[in-house]
Length: 227
Image (cartoon, rainbow, N blue to C red):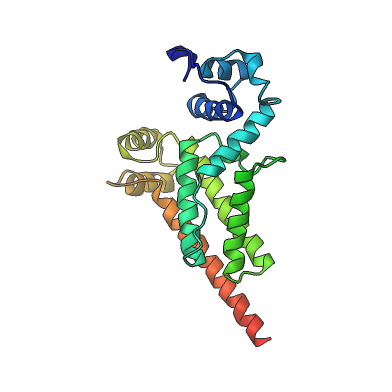
């Protein structure tokens, strides 16, 4: 509970500090988050926070760990592709909820239990499916590069669809001259069409990547079996 809505009388804990920091970052962004603002948001004095976390970096460690804890692990009772779809769609939803998190997700040098558990589960999904260590590394890297990149792009776009996107695209189209024929064609022929949603590119891109991983892995197994 924020001090702006009455003082929270619950004892302060590390968990409460981290949850408060995540909620505040969701509201104002990670760059604007300070110990003083966090203290105000959870209704305590700034120095009290240091009894539970060493510094802001420790808070960010905990924040990233919390975000990872919200992402569904790949289920173990389905094939690897279905498991990656579950995990990928969950990650997109969680990162949309916490738009500040994407650039920080792989930045921590002191990862928490949820971070380690998540990475171990994803590696286990590939290895159980028969991926070699090299193929596992390739698959994990390319999937996460897409997930984090898409989340960052989606979070920074002024709009992704609907009336707001149509209004922005229309304004841009009005500014175009004859020197940008392909941009004009794309804007009027695609973006301004009914039902346009940038989010649809997520499904296309993810399927494309999983198709490529599947083909590459099957080819590798075929070559290995004939060697």
